[in-house]
Image (tube, rainbow, N blue to C red):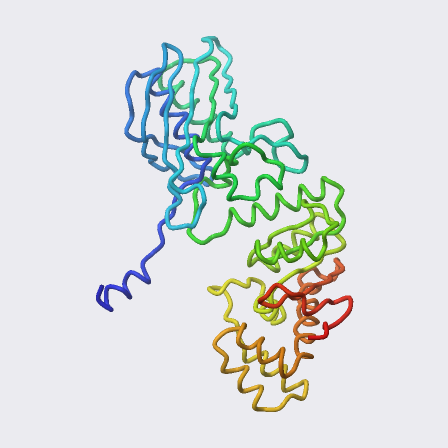
Length: 375
């Protein structure tokens, strides 16, 4: 690829996709069209929750009997990294009876998780199909019935053949969603790199923790830092561990909204530096890890200029940490204290914050309750 084409590809506009909820609504509509109109649509129009109308391709549709049909849609998340991208979302539709009462029964089939814990939008015992997707499914069914001048009760069973396998790549089990994925969507659209699904998961995790009576939560930035935190705090309930990804400020604000009073942050040194700088989002695309700040803090602490220059010129936070750990370990304490100050500021000082910092060998090197560990 030429340099010109490579640059063009790098800056191309990212493509939006549609949610599992939109796919479920499209599948329900396709199945009912087959049942009432005796045709197999190649695509269907679905009204989304944000007011847009999208044409959704249909993968397959078939008639099972006089009163039952099935349709499958392939979830397309666009250019957003999504565990359910390419998954088959299906609907089995049964026309139960013809009368003047319009009713849509929505149930979960294979690969759709069941809610087992309180605190989520869906009550325990119900399939994990949120209110937004339910609304789109009901509207899609109503459109087909009205177009064919029919009325009555319709049963829609949503299924995801690979749902149970895909769910293992999510945090569903911790949230109490067992046996499959959730059918989600607040707008119907997946915006590339919007991270809407991730922040929704943080919200759900906080809600489950609150409903379970947990008063102190542990926030980590990912699976590795969470694993370190779990080893460090073995007595904490699993629901108390919340993976916040890069959403430092937003997660703390949500914790305040839920009424938590104590938060324990568990992070690696690189993320700790970004948090110490007051970055609301620690993603590389959102905020540049400025080792210049780390160098400036070192000078404030009285370190020699040569070390500060090495810190400023370091290629990565890991390289900088090696310098700090061997030559000026007290700087780790400064990073930790600034991290806690940032967290307190984002929570408007309504939450007590403790924190630990881990090195790149997963050893704890700083604890806000004890200060720096002897290195």
